[in-house]
Image 1 (tube, rainbow, N blue to C red):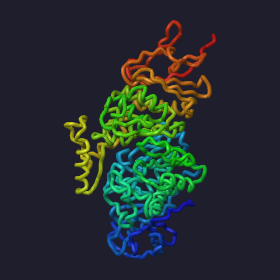
Image 2: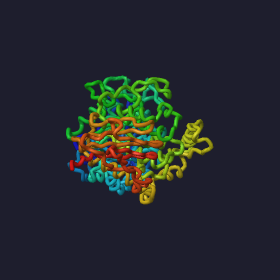
Image 3: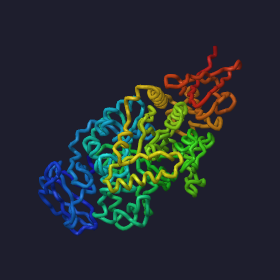
Image 4: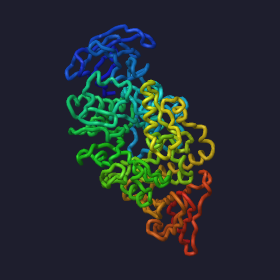
Length: 630
């Protein structure tokens, strides 16, 4: 491993080298502890100033497993801002970890290119009953059988308590003790790679959680009042001392790539990362991380961003940030409105009509500069000819489920016929699909918002959560679950045993076959915009055309989301088969083996023309079949 973490505690074989940025400090010391609960201070060692606010020094004989804290100017002891592990919680001593001690079995693994990604997002604590990295390993074979190629872990940075939704992390380098800590995370990544699965890490570089963040005591320059965010002062990427703050986050990105062999990062809420300097922190992070890796290594950077800004995924030479992909939520919103007719909150900006859905899929997102009623301002810009894989689409994710008051999933609000049709629309287009854990079998469990803060903060979180949803008509008369209650967390755990019973088994079978088609059909492995076309057939139905290397590879996918559809396939250019071919039914989302009402038939008139009669939500996949000359 050629890259080395420039801060934190690094075991050298002779002892441990400590280095910390503490621009506020005049003096810095390391305090060492003994005992399972670090109850006894055994030594205190001064660190020497290096300049630019850094203090460093090597202490002989300090081995991996040693607990330590920093004392700033003789004050209270604090955990290491770059701690690799917090075994006793975010307020207690850090632990020295030797990242070279783990034996990796993924030699030769280079990651997966963006075009191959089918992403499965999961929350470690609720993915399995045990809620650990090690227990997740036991489910990897089922994900491989499903057909996904990458798992995306919601944030695992150390958080207060033993359960958290994911975005209250305060020790960005320390995998959470609740999930098993550093070695367990390495075991999960190693096991995933041996099965051909890439691992993407969700990281939060826009704010820190409200409990256990001691950064200001080391340096007030970690934050700036020059910008504001929903969480208060912004992280300082562009004012005095910002060079050290930028280095801290860039080191974190490189850390996951090198010490944990992570294959990519999902960057949370990049619209809240504010930086007026050049280069932008996102640009520098992308460049520096890739420079630290071999040329042949695939490492993807995916931005969450609500602004529909193509600069995020445009190359630096074109004025962009050079990230690989972006979460494009407009597709989710259009599909959700089409299926549920919701209109509150940001859904007021979407009609769900087939014409708008078509425009969304042609572009990658819907808003390209139009006025947003919800925001009261124009939103977005044209994505131009950016390739479809650069847009990550979903019909569910942790936000769109967990941010609902009752944590309800999409299929809890619609019938399964419509849910199955939406799955086909997601998985058979050329964009990068993302699945939310349990989606593939229509899991019965919700995904609620949960925390484990101290009682004082926890009370405020509970009150705020219930106040947030007080004005929503859909939740009137319902008690919003208490985020602090352990039962809220336990209710969110997947029940894997239900996959074997109907209707879950049928939905799972459909997802497996849709992903098998995506993986094996040449037309579905073509990701260029010119090999993909989409047309509105009715207010609620669309036709998706996929072209392979020849006419015999052509596919026509009809997705009807609501009501009935009576379609003469010869009536419009979008549904006419290639010359010399007829359409043959390859898949019907209402086949009984998927739990549907029964497979449809292609009805042929005496003239030989085909007609589709769909009596409700349904997706059908048609393949080109050469007409026999005999």
